[in-house]
Image: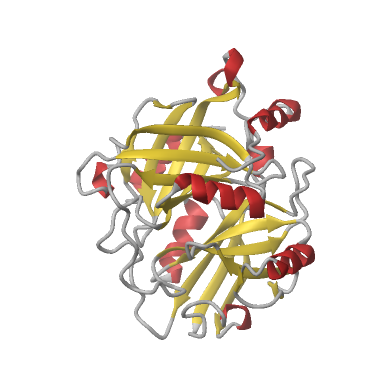
Length: 354
């Protein structure tokens, strides 16, 4: 097996205050495992930062209940810009982060009780699962989706990242990219119209073409069991011209900046991308060191320029104080890590605000 997608590793969020954002997601959505907190220069991302090298702080937070994590990203020597326009559903880029919920009814009741920004009532999605939308205090949209899959027991009602809602300009072309390059071969929903569950979202009363994609069957190793299954929801607005979310702004500015997949077989991905004219725009070539974690990463753009990051993880900390790390380069890529090793990451749990 020379190409494996272990799952969504994380979704990147550009913020003004990384610790403040981490504290909110730790408290309300259970992202309380701080895998690393790294300060350095983003010297490989200059293509997306006006060809300037900026200093930044990055925090990677996980929810051990299962699912992808959050990479909370903050410029240290530049004030991040907000969009000049009100972003509307269907604009090109990552619109919404999908988060798992094992107890969706309780999640909804608690969010209401806490007077968090809920955008609509609890409704059904694809006639099988319940879900609701909300916004974090910085206007990043979040969709909590009923999902019984779990890696470990947790007091949190919600789990990690399940996927993303991505605005596209041509459904046929975008669907082909996500199906062929990222392996989302299973079409779970493909409908056009005005959708009731969208109506409370900015721009949600428009006419959309909506497609939900999943993996039908896949081989996983490493952290694959923790990351679990995922889904991509593509939305194309049909009765207005969508804007590109990061027009006139930099990667790292306010909002969802990328969707990252944990993979094995970077050279195969690069070769397939080249053959399909989806060239890697960023390539760490061999290995990067991100403080306590290391690996190889690359970026490719979807047909509308949404940034997809691919990371082949080589090293992650388990017991940092004692110098104990997981070295994934020496393991069978098809063999998931033992659960006890991943659960040991609870030593990185943050119980109070940073």
